Picture 1 (tube, rainbow, N blue to C red):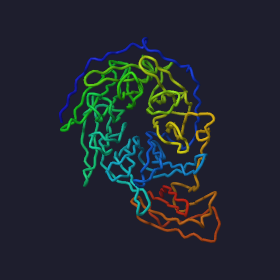
Picture 2: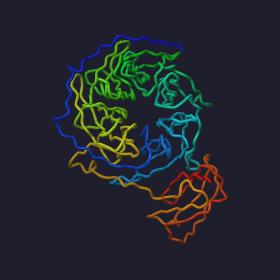
Picture 3: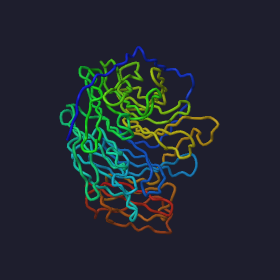
Picture 4: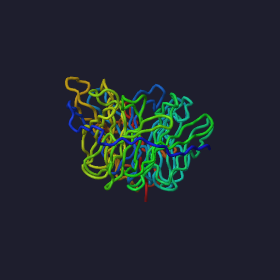
Length: 495
């Protein structure tokens, strides 16, 4: 592997030359809509469509938990009109938590896959894909990884026209590495792209941010740092033969990069820019700042575009066009060090930047994504936020437009199973639909039918109890299917 790993001179623009405004000349109102609430910290979050077929235009939200109960979750808005009604599918409840979660067509079959990776031992990279024939989500192990995951992205990193490159970090401090996993057409391959700089690799993004590379994508990697020795930002690109690496910025101090994103946030620079979230706590001069990095070739420049008033920790980070009142794209970020836990948007260009508080939540936010979250909305993108143990949708509120009205989604959980984990007896409840309309069956983790539960078609009961004493310990999928509803629950049997 060819590696060009050199430190270049960087023009550092003093913060005294940059204009920050915390009071906007135009008011922006935000509609904040809860989608789901759980009991453990959520991590990376993503949104996309074409998950069940090439023609599936339903956008779904995908996220994972790092702490118990360690769910892998998928959300679908099943409403036909406002308000939104979110159905939650629990795809997995694992003894090991996950950090990364991304959506992409990694096997090149025209249908997007769910990709996620473990943050606790045993470390594995997984994908889930929809089995159209049997109508269930199949889990596949792509590879075992060399340590905990902190960063993951899925896109066209080698510029072959397919969004099939899984770029991820594994390991911490001196063992932290960047890897690429990809499908050859017959098997999964996994290879190391960068050996790291002795710090934990906490941010990875794929996109076209280097104008000297034409319209081709590159990978940007951001590492942790300390107040005495700051983090590093590295470009990795495919030159047609090998993966080349170049250090874009080695911050001398005051920065520990926790996340990175790519987007066109600054009209004074051609093309896209890199945005970094600084996660360094007390003692940092930059104190959880949001930093813009821009340039091309071997010439790169940086400047903070947001500096908090007190020491904090920037972590959740995304770029998208979420405001009609600002041309171009905006940066959305959240802090995770301590209260007040806030989600903000930053926008501007050149040396003039403003910021807007969207809302405050009850805990640290590690995952933010922009996209078509509200299908009833006719303008702009929306924001999906994995805030602490809950999922929220946020959108700019525009008065007078009925399709962008301030609405609160229905927290939909039609079917409840308890206890879970369970031993011998399982209770099942459904508040609004009688179980006489359902077919109920239990499947193992690879989709094999274990047991069908007979239901009296003339019984209008909303509560059932099943004896499962004959089923071995393990993780199962309990599937409920009716004419209009298909819902799955992860069931753990542990005696």
